[in-house]
Length: 380
Length: 224
Image 1 (cartoon, each protein chain N blue to C red):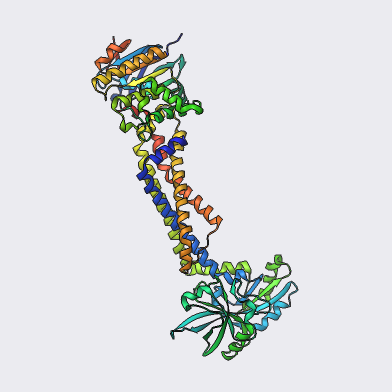
Image 2: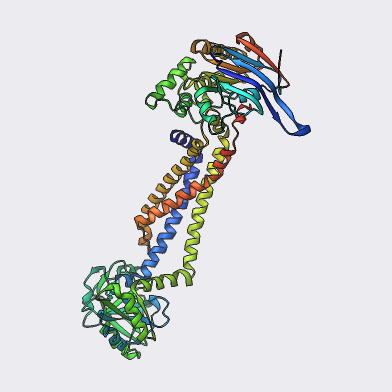
């Protein structure tokens, strides 16, 4: 009966096109919303995910990676004292203002790291190396910041205000695709260099994060528990906990997650409604033929199969067109600065959601056919 | 040898109590192979109700329906589609062809439904259309066929799977006089050449000449 489903579906071209437009729009919207959400969350947690550390120690009551407050850096000794800690390093996260060629200023997020071991350093270098920031007022910026800062060229000088004073920095390298959630340009520099600036604003003995690597990552929970007992004025996380904390902040506390998922859910429901309406209208139009099939000996299940197959075929084609649209527009969106995360799992999950909604939308048609009395076919 | 189809004291009653109406009241008749039985009567006399019960589409309130000697009126609802599939072919007043399928595909559909050999479905369907003289119009959609051609397609469809019984409900009602006569002659030829038992419900006087036997139904009862 798949044969009949296909023949009928493709015979009614206008209805099929309307159905496919509905499913395609639904697919594009759903994939777009979810992939942008995942892309933005990827940006928000990029430094945590790309830093080879098992434990993150931050200021008390931190809400997300971007909102770290300084705390005494000597606490690193308590971390290093634990036998399971292989090494511990300090990272500083602060804010400054870059001076633009047109005289304007642009806020920047500063990440200061130890260039000797590269913990917390930019991980996708386009030009130069992460260790190039060592020994002076050198910075690395990201290619994606060009949207805000203009063309970035290695070797150029940049004026940046940190605290009250303005300093000159030489751009020694460019990374690719490293963005913060806030879209503020990221500026990487050496920890020691930042400390000399921080002295002047009274943060000379402070740090933003202590990150630690364990000899056995499986002991992360136990080490976190031990650190929580000793560092009571800090928040201690495993790497995954800190990622989760950051994601939950941006998703729940800002309401952003609700907005994204509500749009995605609405897109799926609208797609389902369009398919349901189209299939129901088709069923009503073919009711006499379905009655004839029953009279000719077709079982209800065989007719249900026709209707459900049509819903499934529509879902598959509409979804495929939607995916093609997404893949074709992806490059343009990324170039315009939108972070998109697409993965096979996302494609598979959204496909099954679209398929499920389309199949559920066929329910009313199936119910109509179940109630259909084949006697009706004798009525002229 | 048992008749191809037999109804014994079959009744169909609608409503309850004082509102009870007998659409068909204690009708008994038999239909043999190679026979065309014409059931005539005025509108509302119960012809179509009787045909529906003969075709295992409507369950009688009382009485028995036997097909090839097998009591089918007592079978459960889930068994009846198989009986219809293997023993019966239907021709409807409004043709009831699938508009999205060509003439040959309409016939092919029933062959598929009846589980016929899938290898040469198209050839089988064309063979059936050949029997009703419609091969040249086989690839047209119903909307492009005339009324007579649609009804011929419906006959070919009714013959698909070679059922021993064909039930036709007002097969000439939507046809002009000449086409109606051609269609009835075709039915008679099918009965004789293919050893079919054919029951026709009609109030077309032309049908009387071509039927082997005529019964009259009035107020749900057979008239003597």
